[in-house]
Image 1 (cartoon, rainbow, N blue to C red):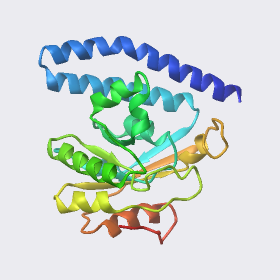
Image 2 (tube, one colour):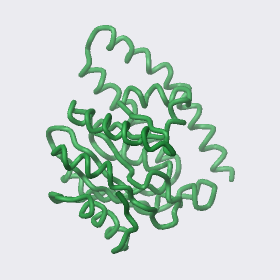
Image 3 (cartoon, rainbow, N blue to C red):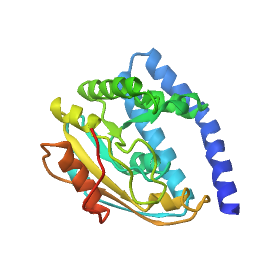
Length: 235
């Protein structure tokens, strides 16, 4: 429990300190240096994410980074175990990533400012209209050269296998000809949610290769890497 208390205290200290790091970003925006601002945002948020993951005490193994497109934007599709999934991807995927996130995060001080800088899209999870609008915004963002992350389960499985995959966002990306990169995250749910405290784990992040014609293929690839062959997915 002491590790958990210290972890969250330090997390909020880091978020508060990040307020100072917003000053250079604002200056770059005022000067119209968009690309430099994007690089700065990526470096700062990646460092924050790496530090957060390191503080948890978990060992992270990443494979398949060669499957990340070298040029152009893409849509990364991942299963969702834990709140740690976002910093795990930010820390280890070597590209600036935006996320489709729950609307509640837009109200978190400091964190929401950086999420906005990353190009995150917020949706109300219980609103079908909000979800559809958010997916369309995310697809447009990818077209505008902002790589995005989508968690089709919509909520965390919290270390208990995986939930239902909603395929609408994946189908929309494929229909628009956007490169789709499936990712499987293993065991992150047990870093916190499963035990309700910070517990160091061996976590794997697997970036899959391949060209995908359907959302079913994408979901199947993610689930197979979890040791599962079937999934209760839906439109």
